[in-house]
Length: 279
Image (cartoon, rainbow, N blue to C red; front, side, top):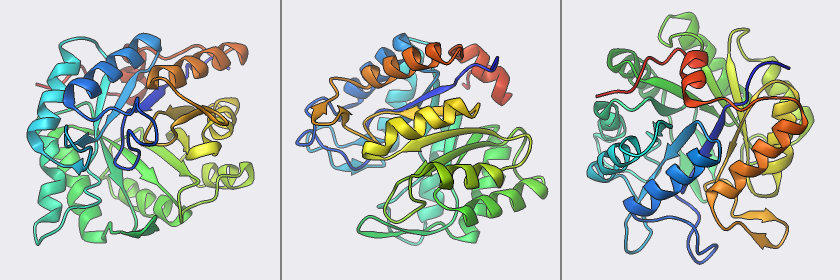
């Protein structure tokens, strides 16, 4: 294989807590430091959620996103992927709230398609959301990272692609092992991959103990890998990771064993057709 591995690191997410692992970052400074450490270890993309710095409660505070984006860019060249999930947002203007992050002109924004029973609640991603988000990403020239938790989500993405609402190459994140999404098995991953467009760039995340086998399978199949505390707080069974960078270092080591180079941020921009950094 001669295509380099793009490593994404999801540094905090909205679910893990310091009670689960003391190294989970909460504050903007902790998140920035973790992203930079992951970049130094070999990550090309940092996937960003924000938290209340004191309590760790999931937040969607715009100024935290701004501070983190600029803080990362001041220190390294890693691509920044801001979430638009808005999993816990409420009110009549949820779509507008979710899409405000596009104003920051990060390199990417996550793009969740299709609703799903997700842990203890319904993760609602309506057709109205899909249309509005796809159009906004095009307008703001922000690359969507299409997060899919089941096969129907891929079908919906393909519809948007065929209608010209998602620029090529589409970038998919196959989300394996979430409750209650696609179970993290090799058979299911192969099935999900078979439904992607021919020109898709695709990466795989696995939740909890499925993280490593899903990452490895993705790399063996020519895909890319997402790691980080959002998906898993353990490096090995019963051994908590000391940092996000540890997850990245492991993928770098394994990719080397498979004969695959690690994609730099510059190479990742070329693969995904992202031009430079935003303003």
